Image (cartoon, rainbow, N blue to C red):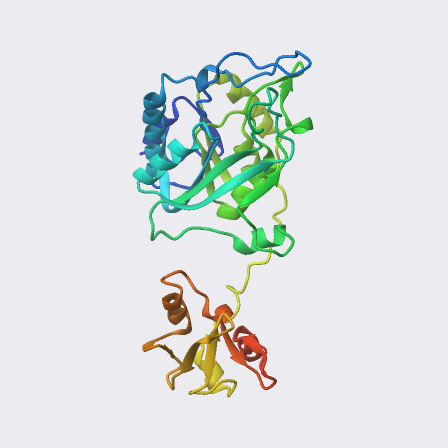
Length: 356
């Protein structure tokens, strides 16, 4: 089997090409497939100028069954080339994303998030017969429920002003100098903004990873991947778009990598037992889950917690209380200080880490 052709645009049908690529060879897939918009007639603005619709041949399908079969085939091919630790992003509108989501689940992917791209400057609903369509939806999925995957949580938090990033992303549509035009006309009717791809790639890949786009278009995914020092593989069947994308990529240079916080993964691990050994807590003391004094656990001599007859680590007891949801016990368990204030036990871990 041939090696993965890095930093290359491959010409042809995406299903055929992906089925010929090495299995489990890419870290991240971003797919912007045809939306199957099902347009009926022309659309005019109130000043009687015509709206340029997405009426390209590549968005034409003979009904939902044909679109579903097409979607199943390319999603299955994506699953084949995606590493077990990789993730898939798919973007769509209300016309197609619900059908896509069902097929994603049917194929065994596990959906991590539904992200809403809220457009700062959407196209108005000129006829005034329904709400203006001001958003698109992205599905983020991994290959299986138990698969490990990349999520750069602290980078996203940093980009969001120190607050946990939410699943509603307010980003302008592609316009201005970024929008590729020839003689004043848009080259591609659905070109996505680089800011959207930057967030996708930064959140769910690392430098040196391989990002695949099976519907490459004008190369936004490749351009952003190159800037962020990731490899890309693009697949596109239209020679015109390939020429535009290649010219764009040739003019794109890698940027210095942003210096994002990485959390505490690089710091020395401190076991909960060290808090007892240091005298900061003692067997028999009580901890309170999420500041709730009714959710009280007793510290046992072996540094486990006992909660309503269940005994295990600070993390496992937290998961037990949350019904199986992941739990970082350092952040969820609280102790009562000498003044009666409830503080997270993470405060005590920092004391140990700093030699107090």
